[in-house]
Image 1 (cartoon, rainbow, N blue to C red):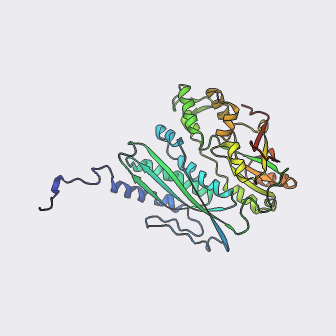
Image 2 (image 1 turned 90 degrees about the horizontal axis):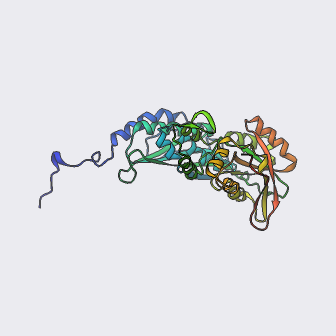
Length: 361
């Protein structure tokens, strides 16, 4: 049997839904965005089979590497449905690098994975623009990524994102501190920029229940469209926290907790030794208007709010009592507004996080 000659009627990869030329054109367009994330240790060039990082050039003597990966959840659906793609990449970076800094690690490098049903280079460039901006805010080099065009797996126009970050800390400086968190330690909260990137399946359900469209004015932010307001990117705490940790006051910081999915209830215990918990005063939190609207429009109970959303506190700082004022002042000097809203307590039984007061929504 002779081999079949496809001739002019043979199928191509492009006809199957994958456009290699479009992917190459997108890579060419994002090169300057990636180069803008250069830092000591990485030249932030893309196009090879792997990205390189020189720990010695970055100034580390005896480093421990710390790695984290994450996505942005169903917040990406709002970006898709509104056509606003230039901030979702900041969320992607933030969700990864904030998880690094809570362990005392400096983010060094970042890689992204962008999967879509049909590659639209304009959209891809806007996504990478946000990723590059997030890397710049975190001080990390964007050293590579992957764009996957998968027709049949994703609908045309749909996409998903994943991020991968690696950081480092000198041996002996990792958090939580080796001397340990103790009862009576003070809990400071750092303000969030909004909903960040958790709880959006519930957010979208509430928006649907309220009969609103993304182009409608946001009930909690007059003059801003609802979709735009909800896409406010996740705050990146890296530079302010690293600067505070390196200051004289930094010795007073014992632990950090990134308030993501699970809210206060699930995230604070992750950095506490067995037998300890947290008493938090909900009345002390300055709750952004978005959370008040979500609670009222969705009829969401307070217990559900504090286990789903950050409610205005995106990062928790556990501090030795004698150093609490100094740490708060150092954070203020770095642009953070830290509020005292709790303390560490003995908690041998569940629940380990015990709220007092009520959210002012």
